[in-house]
Image (cartoon, rainbow, N blue to C red):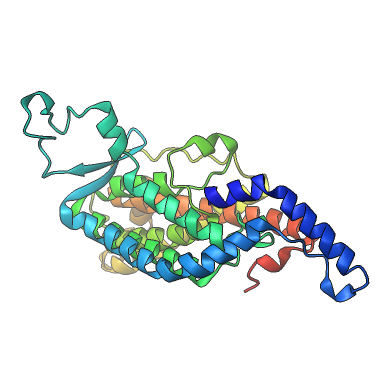
Length: 341
């Protein structure tokens, strides 16, 4: 891409000459249209035809195997102080040289910097490489829309991330603390709702795939909690933090709260059905269930609420953002780059 941009910039006079030449030769031919010649587009098409199309399927397969094999190597992708770090339990020293020996906690700053964001950066860079080829002047304008039209190669890349996310979350729920696993996922996938969030350490991928990932992983967390509720647990000492709705309008906040209320009522209905024997025993089941859910009965209730709040806030943000983009695209008659279904 850098080479193509360099050539296009340094030979821009060629673009100008050829376009003037075309206008002169075809001045009486209305069928030629107004498309301008561009070295950038020519070279991109050549690269796509001769290189990209021949290797991208293999690259995506290697990418999938790389992400899939990581857990087998006992490497854990974790967040420390908002930084993604890859830990390898098998690595104890850098070399056999006594002077260069260091434990995993004593690595040099350069070594730590090399490890930070390794997996995250590969995901972001590969996504950007595919976008560079698949975007055109029309679709680029709708890049922040969750239904922007892209080619089959990006669909394959997208499916790899979704499959890996499912595998990692399901493994995380078995091997690690569920609340911690959720917080790590949230930090990675939360949308950039305001300029201040652009500096966050979340993964920088387009809204289309980020929305799908949020839908996929939160559904796994919510389904997990529904099988774990136990009203016999005492109230948890952990208080659920107040949610912030500063990025939303009053109307959007109202919609989010309504969706959350409906989802929590579903949880209460599940519990009432599960423990209906208590009601037949003369206990006030509704009061017991309300106290358990409303007062954060245990860590499972807290996890369920966190997942529900996160899901509906993210979905409302994407809905609001999509409306703004479509409105802008329609003014320029460029909304064809958005999938209508």
